[in-house]
Each structure stands twice: as structure tokens, then as C-alpha cells.
Length: 367
Image 1 (cartoon, rainbow, N blue to C red):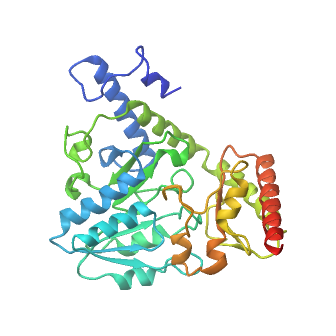
Image 2: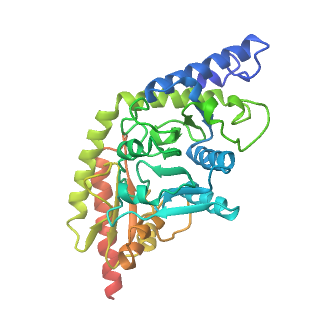
Image 3: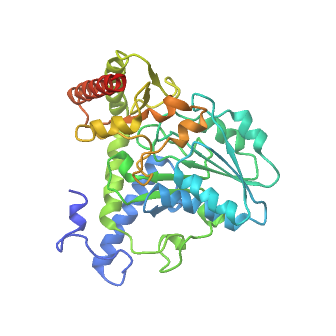
């Protein structure tokens, strides 16, 4: 409803950058209202929030923007080998133009050690970039602890919060994060819109990726999609208000599904099972390849063998590989996710489908 109001001739459809007339001015009012609403939830200044197409663009802008602006101070960046491809591929690009990247490896549960992060710092380090919640395992990194340890260092700390926004508390007055990436569709907002928080935006003075009309303080030119931004702010507020309810709901679903899958033999749950969000389960089944299982379930369930951003190809997870997982456990791993609108009936049915498919594929392997 909030988005529809911005899409019709009787609504706020105009270009929000066209302030010469009242139609554009009203659209701009909605943009700035949405920006303020998001800032209130993140507990930051609204002028430090810029809109992007999503966390992938925000990650690119954070890494390239800092690297290219501050390369005279140093050309070393620290990240982890289990990050989203939008961070890893950006780091590969930066390596190709002369930057040095340290890829920290998580432990076998997917957790990063603070001492390893601090030991990797050099006089050349200008940026540390880490995700708060892993998109394939749901494992949570202690971003608060890391941020506090880095706050007095002469560098920037970037957090990819795509998976955690709306699911975990983010308070930028308490946690000294310098740059934060968000995607609206991860908290039931529209696809194709996101934002990035930049602490002290004017002082940070990122190098923009694009040049053009000067929108978003010159950091992200192009006509702003009023309907998507309004939708994002509305969805973020709802996710914030329902955070505890959603968490408890997904925890119940996770217990149901885990119990069903544990009835099978030789099942391995990947990632720290205590330090994670309940919304994601990563599991491997011995003697069953992920590709075969996905094909068997493709008309029944929407599950995957990794990130949905990986071109659609069925390939081994770089996240699990970074954790030291290999062999059948690596190639048999699937990612199952659920959320606010998944019912207990849905999850029970999903468990039955998965168990039946695994049993069938194991039987075929014996014949």
C-alpha cells in the first residue's frame, strides 16, 4: 500500500530530484522521511544514510570507496574467506590493481577469532570488512567485540549486515561501525533497493563508484526510486517491531525441522549450532550429493546449495570450504531457510519431503 501510493498518477510519482515543482518536492519529502525512519532504527544521523540498489552495491561502494580514497595511507585490507561474493569478488578486483588482501579463515564452526583479526593488522591496513551473519550457515560473528577492539585503530570497519538487519539489534551509537550495508529484500522489503550507513559521511568522503546527477550527496547518482525506498522503510520498521516474535517463530520451526532431519542416519549440521540465527539451516547428508537432492526436490521446495547470488550453478560452497569442510560433507551440503510467513505445517511438510528424497537417493545408490 505504501509503495502503491508512489506509483500512480494520483500519487507521489514524480522525480524526487525535480524540486522546481510541488510534485517532485512531495516525492522528495517521502524520500527524506524514509531516510529518517531508517536512521532512527539504526540510531544514526539521517545524513549518514545513502540509498543504493542493495547490499551488493553497498559492499562495492564501501570497499572500493575506501580503498581508492585512502590508498595513499595504505593498501592492505582484511576480510574473511567466508564472506559474500560481493565482498570477495571486489577484493579480487582490488588485488588486481595493487592492493594486498588478507583472507582470514574461520574455525570449523564458522567463527572468527578476534586475536587472528588483530594479528593480521599492519601499518598499511586501511579497512576491515566482515559480515555479521553468514548467508549460508546463519553463524553470527561478534561484531560488537570486533568493533570495540578496532575503534582506536587508524582504519575503517565495514560490516555487511544484509542477513542480520531486522533479525538482530543494530545500535550504531553503541557499536563503532564505520560503514554498514543493508538490503531491503532480506527483511521483506522490495528487491533492488538497499542502503549504506557511513559514519561521519562528510569527513569519510568516500570515492564514488559512479558520477552523474549528484544525488545521494554525490556518492550514488541516479533518479531515486521513491516507491522502493518507501517500501524499504516500511518493511524495516515492521521487521524491527516484530523482531522478537519473528525470532521465536523461526526458532520453533528450526527445532521441528532439525528433529525431523535427525531421524535420518549420517546427518551433519554445518556451522556453530548455538551461535547462529535460527532462520538458516545448513545440513549435509552422507551418500547424497547436493545436486541430486536439489533436482529431486526442485518442484516441491526452494532450497539451495549455497548463496542465491552464485549464477544459479550448483557448486561447492566456498563458505563451508573456508571452514575446512571437504569431501561428501561439502558436496552434500544444502541450505534451508524460512521466515515470518513459513508455518509449522509448511516446515513439517518440508521435513517429510527432504527425508523421503534422501532415503530414496540412498536406496538408488545401493542398487
